Amino acid sequence: MSAFDPKRFGKVGVLMGGRSAERQISLISGQGVLDALRSRGVDAHAFDTGMHDLAALAAQKFDRVFIALHGRYGEDGTLQGALEHLGVPYTGSGVLASALAMDKEMTKRVWINEGLPTPRFAMLTADSDFDAVARDLGLPLIVKPSREGSTIGLTKVTEASQLKAAYEKAAALDPDVLAEEFIDGDELTVPVLGVGTKGAAAARALPVIRIVAPDANYDYQNKYFKDDTRYECPPPLSVSLQEEVQRLVLRAYLVLGCRGWARADVMLRKRDNKPFLLEINTSPGMTGHSLVPMSARAAGLSYEDLVVEILATATLDLHPNAQWKPE
Image (tube, rainbow, N blue to C red; front, side):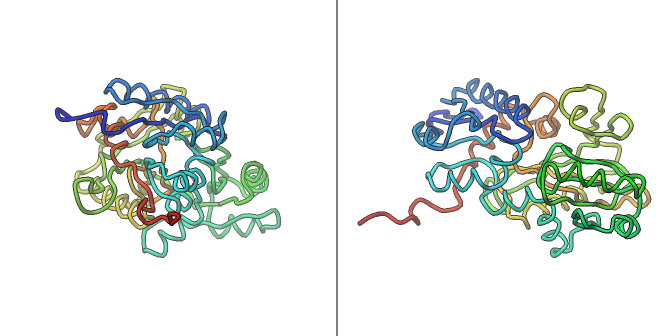
């Protein structure tokens, strides 16, 4: 970073807060990103999309923005579409990839179509035959909203009689509810950085992290606010197996059309060490407990360098020159 010129980024907005169930985490992530950019001399400014509207965003005349929002209205393609309309380059995936990745059902359908392994699933409704779902997917199984993150609304179901209540809990957050086959094994996560397969910013998988949570319960509190969870990076896995998982995650990232950065969660089945893709986050956490900075450190990349590298990939789906201009 010796030739780094912070002025080339211009005026940078760090978008944080928002209106999703992950607002508080986003505020912490955003503050971390803001501090990192300012420490490198970048003209960075906080902007809370939950407190200010798009007109206020446009009035700021940011040259580019770092999206530190999590969940709906920030990670799901809606804000990305607004930024495309405003012509403000942004970090992370574009409109389509953001929308796909936020929707666990659609993510799975793309991965299955591409031959990538992901746990079997069924979509639930209030009229579902819950006993039949339990028989088909087996027990235990996981029930979760299709478009929430941070394990919000998630239930591990061990008996068929628990399925209806688990469905209702998830449906209170999202009308689309997913029941997923439970994979018994290690929980892994792998970040990806980069915009594609070629050039200086070629997408690359960072080191694998193994997550060992208390009672195997990696919930919202254990993710962000407790210190009981153990993170192993590198994990106690063979190098060849880690590389297999990294290749799988990179493929999962590329087939969805992701760019900039993301983090994929993987279950490694105990009985045969087969990896299964769970989901991918296109605007991951950047808090003190977050996993992308942890993996980056293992790769020799500081938090500050990580943030600057992500900011450097800010772009638009549509090149400004392709937009209509009045004659």
